[in-house]
Length: 109
Image (cartoon, rainbow, N blue to C red; front, side, top):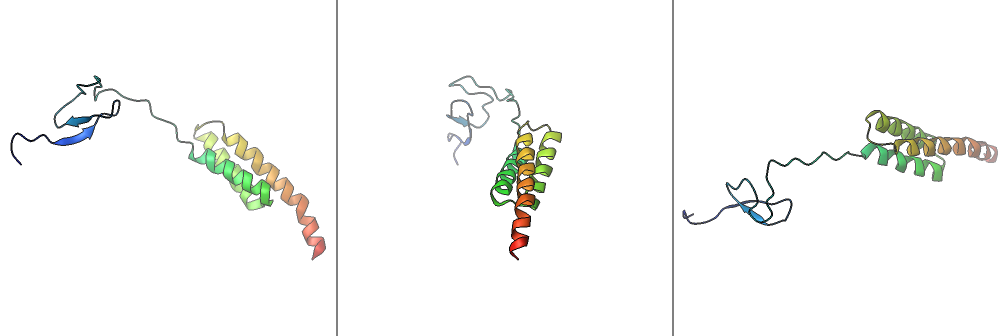
């Protein structure tokens, strides 16, 4: 590599243009590498809780309802967001539905 070649090391997260090695800021938009973006909250447990709650509601599954309640409580305790409550409610409804349907299946057997 000759001394005149430019080495591409990264892309500006604000304008998307290529930044050369050694540049600490973007000469095109003025973005500075020192800028800090606020961290985004992960909503993994809330989403899992809602998914398990919906599936337990549809198929009347007690284990899925328990899983939805557990994941929803975990999401709330981690302060992800308040969507864990939706998963908890759906999990409870799924368990109640399963307990209502279970005697029908047992009477058929």
